[in-house]
Image 1 (cartoon, rainbow, N blue to C red):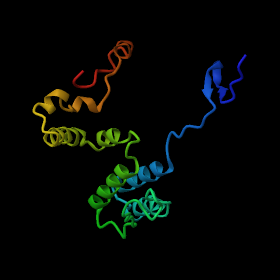
Image 2: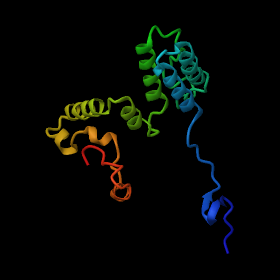
Image 3: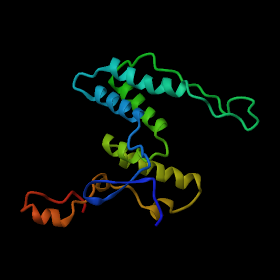
Image 4: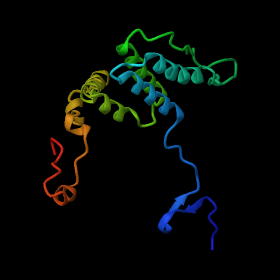
Length: 173
C-alpha cells in the first residue's frame, strides 16, 4: 500500500489536498477594500489611497527580475505610490489599473470587467483590435462577439422548476 502524505480527509470522508492553495491573495483583499471605499455614497478616498499604495509599495520594494548576466534589472521599473486621488473617478481608474497589473494572468480580469459593467465594450474592442493587428479578415466573426448575456450564468432549469415560479431564467438563455 502506497502512503500518500500530501492528502488529508475532510468531512464525510472526502479527500482534501494537503497542498496549500492560495484562494485569494492579500493584494486582492486590499484592492477590493479600496474599490469598496471608492464606491461608497460618500467615497473614502484617503482610505482607498492607503490600500492601493500598500500594494504598489510592496511591488516597488520587491526583488526585481535580473538580466541573464545579472548586470542589473531586466526592465526599467518605475513603481511609485500615488500622491493622492483628486476625485472618485480618478481613484476608480487607478484601482482598476492596479487590479489589471497585479492580477495579470491570474484569471481575475473577466470577473472584474463583468462587475464593473464594461465587459462587452472592452472584450469586443480587444477582439476587433486583435483582428486588425493580425491582419485577419473575419477574425471577429470567427471568435464571435461578447454579448451582455455572458455577464451572468444561466440558472439551471431544475432550480427554476423546483422554485415554483420564484426564479426566472437570466436574460438571453
